[in-house]
Image (cartoon, rainbow, N blue to C red; front, side, top):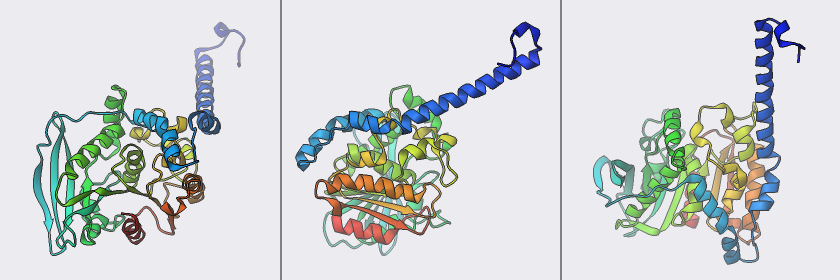
Length: 356
């Protein structure tokens, strides 16, 4: 304190001291919470994770409580009524036929996506790839439109051309999503939870289509789409494979530790990304243990500012241990490349062909 008697100093001095104390309190609070998140995480891992690596069946049983808690972090929204599906044309050429699909989720909320199919099919039923767009983007970009920087490399269209059924769901994009996150939080859920439930509803419909092989479904998302890939696979067993592009990270630092080598979510306006209880026990490596034994590919560019790639490698090595201990190391792969925030089509296609 800079005074001994409040009445003896002027209001300006008193206000300055009050402001300084508030500044100190803000820093103390942030340092305390950050320390709990990062420094105490290993203690929480020991408390919340009781993995049994003796066999795959035992492992899956041992992580089931964590899976339930992860679903609780996201929240659950229930669909209502019939699909009331509608279709509108999107594109048609010698290689691909694509159209918009719209179906009812609940009340006046609908699920919308572009569904693309190859014009020439070798089999009646096709493996399905959920091709998920990123922040500030759209399903059209997945299909090769509105993508001037060419981050997506038209991967949705190319997958359809290469023999896959492709669905590109529409999610809310843009920073204004914080408005909907606030509404969801008032219900004890999250915007991410709503989007995951809408995706489940979309799958309910798609597996009933004659073109789709419901036993061969993969998900490949970039950026925000990688976020949804990582969030969805632990709670949607119908998805047999995941490719996470430009999102997988050392989650603790990425969320709360500012660093000039990458963008930290704490210093952005992306309120939607903060899920209640996420970093209590669910680092990216720990989330991947809820995806075992399904194949999983991480695509990370060394020039991508969303991450510091050596930390991504470190997190991936931790995730790989879950697969290694169960004799499944060939099912998890890191595609570390010299590029930036972009799809790597060739490695993703090879992974899909191998496992799907």
